[in-house]
Length: 217
Image (cartoon, rainbow, N blue to C red; front, side, top):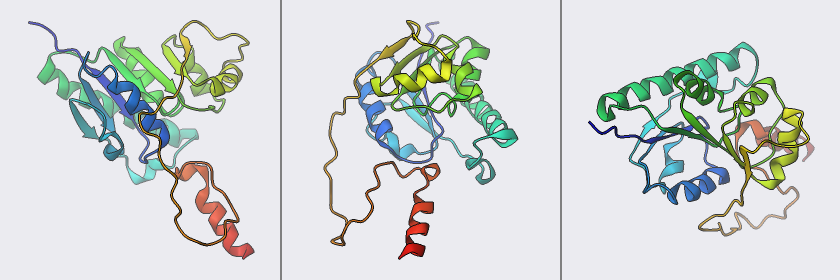
């Protein structure tokens, strides 16, 4: 029996962002070579991806904002079980585990995928779209030897995270090319006093900024 190998895309971020648009453009270039299965907290982000199937990653409200301490590890354990459960379901259909796992949220955020890849000896591809924070979890992930594509602007932060002056050969720079560049739109005619250049992810702190602006007004 011929094994039906596939690529598993893991996305634990419950918001849409430019990095997902760029990841979609990159994966669509190779989607005809291996079928892609998606496990995502925000399925609408992957509507333009030529994937075989997709599954919703439903994260308990209590774990959503956990970024450190025991809460972070419980969240990663939950993600590990979610990935394992999807792999088991696909095993019944495809008689195979994924040949590769693709992640693009950041090494610390994608820790669960690294743990699953380590446990089942699966190749992993990490895509880094911007500077990363230094942490023990990110350091461990990036030291696993998996192929890591990164934007040149993220190189310094990766070196800082790894305490390395030179990156190993598994780190490959790439150009973040988008198939369609979003056109800016004017939302209102009010004078602009603050220009927000970051994404709308909650941890970026836009809600805190707007709240402080209200008090200053």
